Image (cartoon, rainbow, N blue to C red; front, side, top):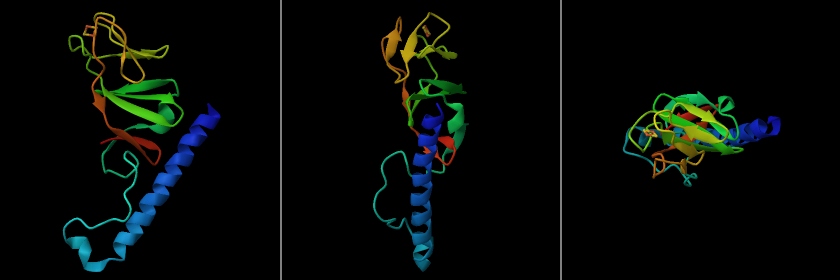
Length: 144
Ligand code: FES
């Protein structure tokens, strides 16, 4: 577990360094800051660029091999440093999933269970949880 969190922070540091470089580059451009969107240099990989989205959880609060439910969003960490987001609305009849245990996201209404990647582990639900895009920013998980 310790190594896992350390790995997550290492990845976060890279993201922050990239953001800092991009931010500094923007300051040197003078008047273009007030104009329309300016080119920000090389494109960053999806899910790592600062989005200004809402922080919904701390990275340290999302266990590897499990996850957390925050309001209408489920955040999981199926593998170290790999975070996934989903709607907490069960795809069977619309109840709210309310528990993550033993590697599944569970719905209390009719017993559906979903794997940490959102796919159906056990019916009656027949389709995966709806995906939401989340990213690591600093020590937080941000909903984009
Ligand atoms: Fe979730 Fe039926 S609404 S199992």
